[in-house]
Length: 304
Length: 255
Picture: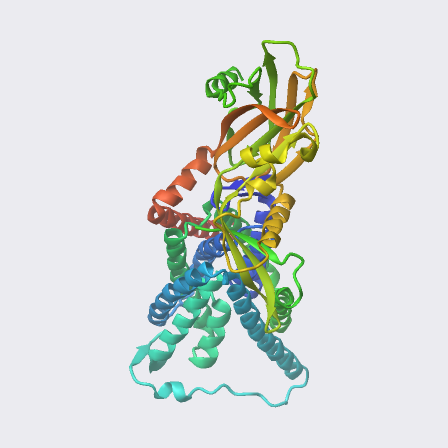
């Protein structure tokens, strides 16, 4: 069943889009990630123009994060104050990212930028996650081995401008969260992702936040950053396709519910290894595209 | 259909008054192409007749060429090059006026039925249509870039050369069908019909076929472009409503 997307200006199979949304939703339910890092490249593969894929991806993440954060609100695992501080940085970063995106688009290098960002970040995060899960699986097999202890106090705790975060039970400087927020904001504008896959490890390992509030707080922050990015894209490039977004959201919602049920039957380490392999697979495919000679050296872009 | 023929009659342009002893009367299967939510390409049937006030001339065969041109616009053609081990966009050529769609159909091979002078005058073959005059370039080999443009758009069905696809009966009735792909740009699609004898054009008929989005597609597209803030906010409201609605629904089902 073909459907014509009014902004993307292409006809795509509606069931394919529902399926894509469902697949990414399944993964996000299974692994607790937003899945934007998979959605954007998959939309490229089905022929959605990159600008529309990035902008509409941001819109779809608003919906999935909103749906997910409701569950965390009920469990009271959202640190609003920390979310607000991260958000302040995030908005600045997203604004900056949109400018960088526009400047490189004018020079014809935006595809390269997006691909390089994906390769570097997916490679780093996927590699680390794979290594971590392998180690913890080995540790689980022979108990009594060395257990690494997370440092609770590091140089971050010596910075000025301290603030009390009651829900997280922390008293730290606002500088690191603002910087992390800004960095992730830049990424979400350029890559069309929520940035949870960077935000979550940064909150745990750099800020030392308790794991139970990390996901909820990250989701809370992502809603606003991606909503801001959607609005910016809608205003500057008119590339948000609401028909595409609705199809992806519908598929995603169903997939997420199935995914979260399946997730309860699997072990955490197995899940993480699976996710890490998936991330590395996408990374490898994108890296090959950069390294191998493309079959078509030329590309067209309608100029303004 | 009657409307189309009437419109065609009003739009009739006789640019060659001295030669027009044979004239074109045109019909179209549709007088506009409407892009709806389920639009998946369309087939445009173009047919017509040659009207004469004198017997059929005996010198040379009558030939017909039909062209359909989508809206023109500027275009960047880029070429990748290996730099530091990875493939990146390097050289580019900027074309001021490249057609977003171009189809040419004829009764025979263009090089046999059309003289180079007439081609130059009317701009019929793709080589003439893709204009490199005014191209901003930093490269020596512009022709490689225009060849790439043709190759890419031909593979997407946006540029079509269908030599021999016009059927001509009794030197009077002609018909052809042109496949419009789904990724059409909105605008007026200029349709030209050339009658030729001895490789010279004896009559031209020109009409425009509007291609436009209708209904919901039209409304969304207009809103996105004229009221981007409103459209952006609407997208967010829809996203949040869908996210909240789905979450509420599944909680209800779990009970």
